[in-house]
Length: 154
Image (tube, rainbow, N blue to C red):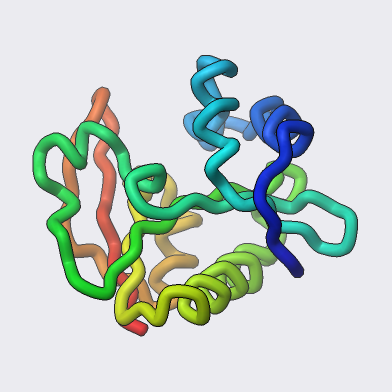
């Protein structure tokens, strides 16, 4: 796998990705807003195949969670958000995908902790994150959805 700054073409492809229910919660809305933000992300490739993306910092936080203080500043911690091509989800590829991203970020930033946010209904993802060593720190509700904030110590 390799990463590179997301191109406009890659961003257009990702915005069109459609996940099956209940994961359709993660479908992009407001294409222009999503597109502009996505240009700050990194694309993840396996050979020539676009398999996913990731973002860090405030881009990885749920705005309402940030507004209510669910993301306290912690030294040597980076917020991480990501998405995988819906054609690849549920096939046991997530562990390798996320491990690759974490390894790249740890090398780049020399981190002690990584934090992510996940919708509580997404049990499949939560199980994976726990296998990767993430632990739930707090939760909050935004737009009738409960989110868990999880941290992995590196």
